[in-house]
Amino acid sequence: MADLVHELLFDSAARNPRNEALVFQGSRLDYSALAEAASAGAAALLRLGLGRAERVGVFLEKRPETVVALFAAAAAGAVFVPINPVLKPPQVVHILKDCNVRILVTSQERLAFLAPVLKGCPDLRAVLLVGRSGAPAAPEAVELVDWNEACSRGRPPRAHRAIDTDMAAILYTSGSTGLPKGVVLSHRNIAAGARSVAGYLGNRESDRILAALPLSFDAGFSQLTTAFLVGASVTLHNYLLPRDLLRTVEHERITGLTAVPPLWIQLSHLDWTLGGKHLRYIANTGGRMPKATLDTLHGALPHAKIFLMYGLTEAFRSTYLAPEELDRRPDSIGKAIPNAEVMVVREDGSRCAPGEPGELVHRGALVSLGYWNDPQKTAERFKPAPGQPEGLVLPEIAVWSGDTVAMDEEGFLYFIGRRDEMIKTSGYRVSPTEVEEALYATGLVAEAAAFGLPHPEIGQEIVVVATARDGAPLDAGALIAACRPRLPAFMLPARIIVREGCLPRNPNGKIDRQSLAQEMASELGAAA
Image (cartoon, rainbow, N blue to C red; front, top):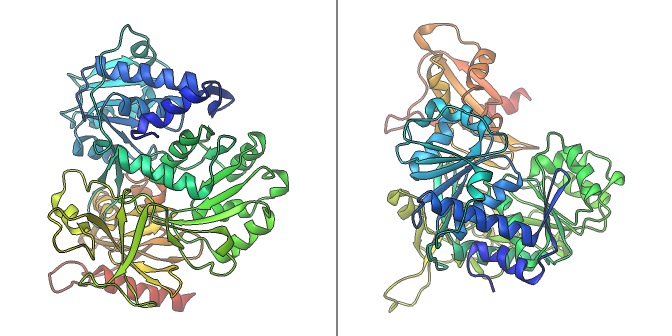
């Protein structure tokens, strides 16, 4: 049984070396070749002086080198940090600085994109470049190394020893305020998560899984770990249009596909008679899928089991609704996944009665190690699990989700809302403060407040109320255009409402997002 992340890959390579492991744009790697590449990548990292538990950033689109670099870092005894390829340079640099990345794996094109701001990363010592080689600019004291050349050098140094409770990865997710925060995952978290999810999905060696989600997402990376656990095949896809995915589902005889609600909505509008006959299951994560979309997909894919999943990066995956329960309770987020307990508790930690709203608390092997370099936020979210014996000297730590749910008499959970001000849009968690910072950076606004309002397809749309600087005219279209270089598409406001004067304050003197959100929901709802 694999205890470490890279053992998921290496164990399958030992069992079935010639089984297909990875597919990308027509190229195919079997488990033996992929494991050899990961070993060579680990050796390359170690030769560059990578220390135990030091961080390796990987800023690439989905491609074989991305997978190799992530598992190579784990095999070296280091920590991998997958960075969402749609992020802008300031956000990438924040991540590199925040977790003191020592080695960055990226492409020449992406390095040129980052070069103007990389000098703000004093811990960065080397950049490994994959793909087309050249001579891009790099900050002083940063060594540029060709990926293929580095992986082909001589005898590898000995890897740093790791055990299952050691750090394996840092996944960055937006917080309710400020820039993204890093969730620290151990080898145990990731391996236990793979076993749990593969267990209820029934993953098997014959599965062919399509990786459509970013590998920087816990659910996206899970497509690799669940497949490698059982020796299945993964097809990497950087799709431009949903129809591209449908073609790949058919061409590669895909048996498993996980996506977020906005993508499922788009896919449900396509003609599935052109493909999908091999799909054994589909799964939803990152928000509630509309009932109409569920019904359409069920009709189009009658032989595919549908799994609805709920989770948070801090505990990877918490609940799932079994396919046989879908017709009876489509609004439920299900029950706890294997090897986890999910509780609904009051503010004092006591358990809620059936039907009583409370906070979702998750305990078990998937609870992460907290937030990187942020003891205050870690203490707020990671606290002793309720109901432990009084004599326990070292209490078990659970993750307190901040989400309000209710549990029915049969133990099925129902999501009610989020306690913080996070915006959940298109499967992403977006910090309103980060949106506001981009607005302020344009120099066009005096004050701005961002919040989410319900949207039938993407979960929430980002709405901004802003005032102009110095009484100058403020055009909403021009403001969005000014934000585009600063924010990825999923973080751009859907609506900007321009106001005069000052925005409302709460008793602490801060802009009152909550009252603005309530006001705008009423006004926009009435206008609709």
